Length: 488
Image 1 (cartoon, rainbow, N blue to C red):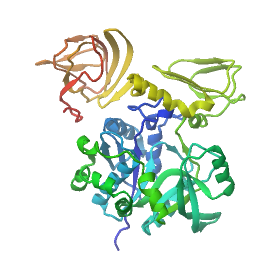
Image 2: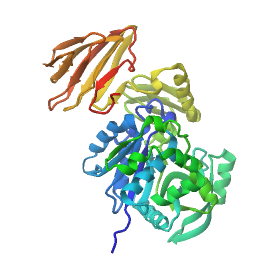
Image 3: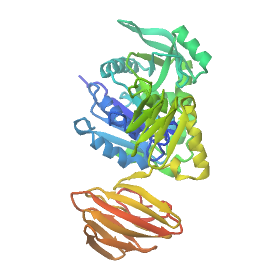
Image 4: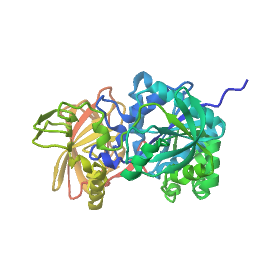
């Protein structure tokens, strides 16, 4: 008897999470944020997917720049880590339609068109794994019949932050009522009056953004409803169909013309109008961690309604959320604020204005300020660096190089670099020379000279670097060799 088609979870891990600035940035998005329990959203999503019956493979669609960070995070999951993980690496984001289509092409090539995809954003919290697995089982059954399935969440209030799903005729039942419906339509985020109307009719569910379908069904839906998008993606997908590699990169030149459009707009809304979409009613708890208001709700309140993370002092303070990073944050005589403190940026906002945080990010981007893109500590494939101080003509960094890792062989045209090894032994390539530098040793690399730092030992190498020059931007770099595929 032939084996049943496999269930392949596909995690979509991208997006800057602009409403969660300054903790979420383009190069450190919200999927990597540490929650109050110390775990990241991405790790929770991966563990939830891998706990489903019969799942032994995980596909992650993410940005090329986040690949090594994602691999390190998965490796750090211990016994829960994915043992059969594959990656599709986009050179830049093009929203969910392109990501899902590429994943479907890859799944179809590996497992055939009957393989079932469970598409999961990386920024959801679901605590009730049993109820989630029950909903997935219903979705899988409907997907095997050819339906495009989405998951609806029972509203707990008149929420304007989420889109809605209008339910049609019931498709099947559970012990407490209909378990699935035919989708009438997808509804955009409503105004407050409409949200109260949807809540009163009891015929609308929150749109969770999770999906389930066979690879052939979703690709067929693209052919019917978004043929131009699918055609534009075909050149990008050549390697997906011809390679058995677990990590596949999309060519930037081929990907650049792809329009940025969501799966809902491109496929699911017209497919619902055609009667091809089913809604599984999710009876599990669900949180879309898309704003600071949602993050605040994860922490227990004190007697005055204050919540937070980190070391805080609250005096005559009410209904205020504080995220304290590396230092203590004290509030006195304030109420209804959100205060998010990070090493290089501070956000103070009235809680009624938290949906407008993305406007701050847009303003920083318009100014060309790096704070919209990178935090003070930046993760790299070889380790990380933290900007300690800077001023006209100089910048000071703390550099950590993981065991067995190495920076690229590179040069800088506009700055010199001065290194002091403060922990471990660094192996240095400097021009034509190679030599080891032990703790307390130092190296000076003038502008224009090739160089590389490498850790050949078993312990972390820590270096303090002082950069000097008229221009100290991270884009002043020419790579010649790189084991992480970043050299041109």
